[in-house]
Amino acid sequence: MTRPVVAFQIRGRDARKLAEFYKTLFGWKMNTDNPMGVVSIEAGEGGPLPGPGGFILPGEPMTILFVQVASLVDSMTKAVELGGKRVMEPFDVPNGPTVAQIEDPEGNVVGLVQQ
Image 1: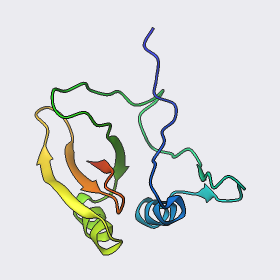
Image 2: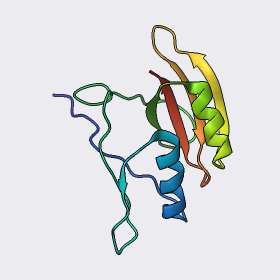
Image 3: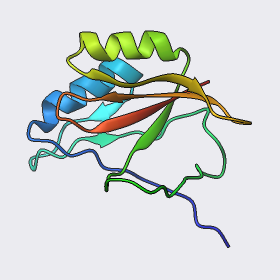
């Protein structure tokens, strides 16, 4: 049986600043009431069920999470306004979705998938 991805972590030197970046960019609901500085993120809605699939590719070691957004262009513009960077411009995956990539203020790469 294929086991689904059920959680993720985003790490950075300033977790609270990263939390605000993602909260503002994706509308994530978060709980910051933790004495150890851990920010918990509520599960989202509208994604694939029972969980997302993934890929293993050749290249430099890294992990990228992909977030479904209503507009790639608007999300990329907002990411830059919040201190992020554009990494990969939108492109159509053959027989798949349209995707793009951004970098958060700490340098983590995040994939965006057109809803």
